[in-house]
Length: 165
Image 1: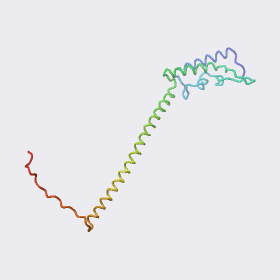
Image 2: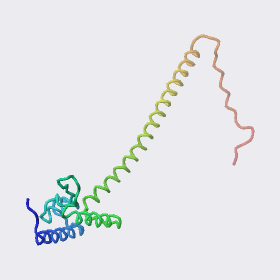
Image 3: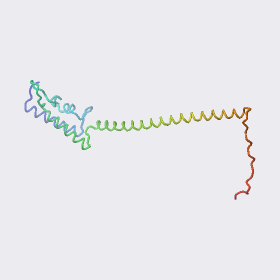
Image 4: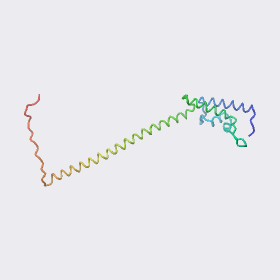
């Protein structure tokens, strides 16, 4: 690819700025995001122009449109800090991530409660079984011919005083 003429560079910068304004207003193409890749596609320039280049001696030099990429990132960060998100899909993803985190927290709490209730149920069933075994043992002891006798029930006696009326 040859060098760009000044008029081609000016035309490309104009196209990049127009695309940048559209993207930052939230006018995203279908399937696009508010990023450098979409900016390059919308402006009709290659994405490599937004990144630094290397000279033949290994030293770095800025890409032809790197200053525009930095401006785009600054403006996008300023919009995000102001609470405006041009990419509604990214905002929805962030909202859903927060919602998932909250639901995972609630699930952990409910799983803890469920474990406690299961433990309580197991203890209660064990205690009921032990009490049932003790009742059966006492009934057997009562019915067996041993020195255990049932006490006679007290006769039903009327109250010494009359009815309370």
